[in-house]
Amino acid sequence: MMKEKTLFERICDRDIPADIIYEDELCLAFKDIDPQSPSHILLVPKSLITRLANATEKEASILGHMLSIIPQIAKQQGFLESGFRTVINSGPDSGETVPHLHMHILAGRKLTWPPG
Ligand code: 5GP
Image 1 (cartoon, rainbow, N blue to C red):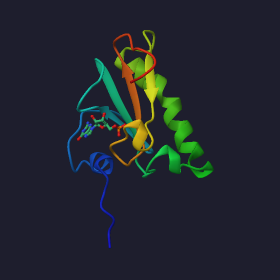
Image 2 (image 1 turned 135 degrees about the vertical axis):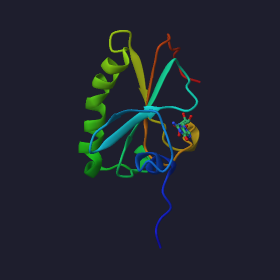
Image 3 (image 1 turned 180 degrees about the vertical axis):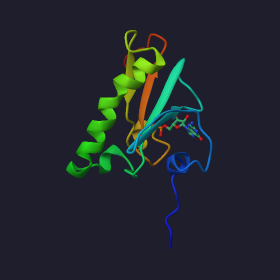
């Protein structure tokens, strides 16, 4: 039986629309539908990793790749200099709602710390 696609696999496959701002062979970045800051981008691997809690050494290169392209995204979106926050929620206490690892990139306002 075919496993049901995650929401973000459906976005990667263009089954459902998203405001896509970056794509390469390994990952896709698009605008969050419910932005928590003036710029709120989600960066996802095309090949499913459910959450950081389930990642292993096997995922080291895709995770490293994703982190390494964030400066490019920040430059393209105009917040490389002003700053940004990168967040990966993992598991119930974090508020994770989509079981497909995603990096939030938040920018465009002064963010508070600690997060809620
Ligand atoms: P999490 O809470 O799992 O860390 O983040 C999931 C994120 O996905 C949330 O910020 C939420 O607003 C976003 N999101 C949920 N559904 C959609 C959708 O259909 N399209 C887009 N672009 N973002 C979504």
